[in-house]
Length: 416
Image (cartoon, rainbow, N blue to C red; front, side, top):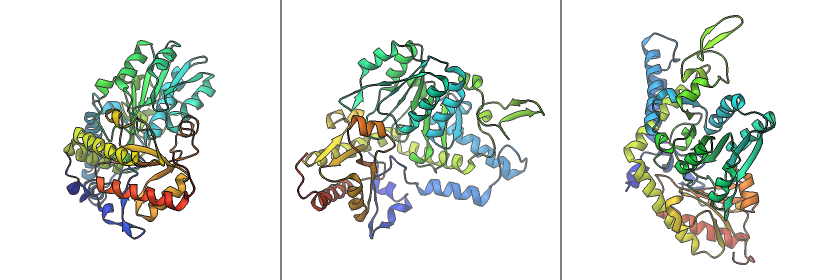
């Protein structure tokens, strides 16, 4: 298991206070905090070898280029890709999905084609497909959920009989915490002749993922959810797909040659990365991955399962709290994400009470409005999420804050 007290010393922000109380950060699903190892790596770049990549032949420019490319190699190994040629850096998982849609989707989806996604998706894996479907006059269809918690695999199998062109689904829900069987779902989709995109924004930071094992064609992730800076994410795609896909953005660095009437494209992955890239983001990503690998992704997963099981147990003791997503018996298929409602208390009011106690949680529809409003049937829900630096003591304090919110805002409310 992780030495959490030692880990916490690596995160400077955890020594700060919020509203005069020690910060308890329970919103890592939105963005993770950054260890000093990542902060220092970025600082060293700006202090010691800040230069543009792929341009200068002087020493610090070559070092910046080498570090940036090496960060892709480190990430490729981390997610089980063949090599850095399959890693395209983007700003975040949202842009990664959009890149796949705008390049592969625009080229390959035609009128009447079917696009299949699930009803537990983040807006980032809904809106781009909606836009593509409208542009191409394609059909966008949804996989149903069982009890509002997990993918209905029977419905999925039935929808695959419609021979979709592509299937896109989240590896792990940012609201329900549900971990989907990406390997099985990919295999089923491929057998039906479909391409597969997996949204790995929530899985890559918290569990071991392998492109070789999952077998998907595309995989999207965000650095800022896995200890890296904001503004850096990646689209993994099989090399043969990237070779065939056209670039989306034109300009410097993505070209091999430019004439007045036409141009030719750079080799992979650079043909998809136009202009000056987020060099510091790549360097921060490398430091973040090394930090996670040193801890061990399996140990990270076990730590979060332990916290999540403890939190679910504590919340189930409160008859005025409703928890969404898989229960404690399904802890092996659940991330450290718990969406919940307090009877008679709006999620924004609950968040305000948490804030007054120095606790950071999220409230609202969590960029999953169809799921929250149509499946969960709530206008908004509260959410706490855990990572490597969280403790059971923090969960106890959060449970106390729930009681305070209930007492303040729901004196006359009935139990859930």
